[in-house]
Image (cartoon, helix red, strand yellow):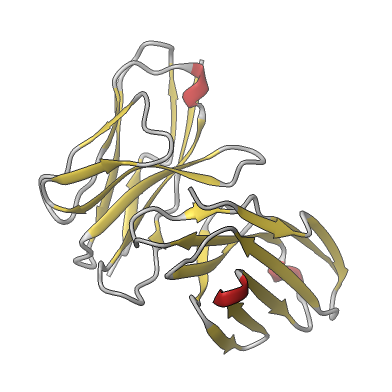
Length: 108
Length: 113
């Protein structure tokens, strides 16, 4: 299967700070998603971004498929951004492979 | 529009017992799948289906059975539960068409003693 590495594994930020999370993957992909798992365990879809750049409020993401990585940017972080951020990739559309996540803690 | 609904939310089983985790979606998605989430290991695919009557194995299928008799439902069966199956289970669905994201249910926390 496709290997997915996320960095950093843990991140602690002061409220208002910016951060960049990275996802590297080992093979060509046709699908890439970023998820936020909140403290209640729910998986929230942030971006579906197999290539290019998207923005949604304070969050944006960029995927460079030819170089096999994706970045998630969080600006002006808030305590509600705390949780675990997962990247998931797939080539066929049927078997998504997840990274082990970046655990983010935002301190007031 | 409820999205992806999983039941139960919590379950405790004894080793050797059987049970079925339920998953239903009301978005008319062709693709449905089951993942398990263990600490430090992210989510791993157990089984998936691309339509009624079609199922296939994922990364960690052993100990689990699935069937897909309708578009809406995709139950996951544990025939003889083992402590190694203690985990949080997530169901997800998506349209088969390109550019369609995965939508997850809220999960079922299973403990096998």
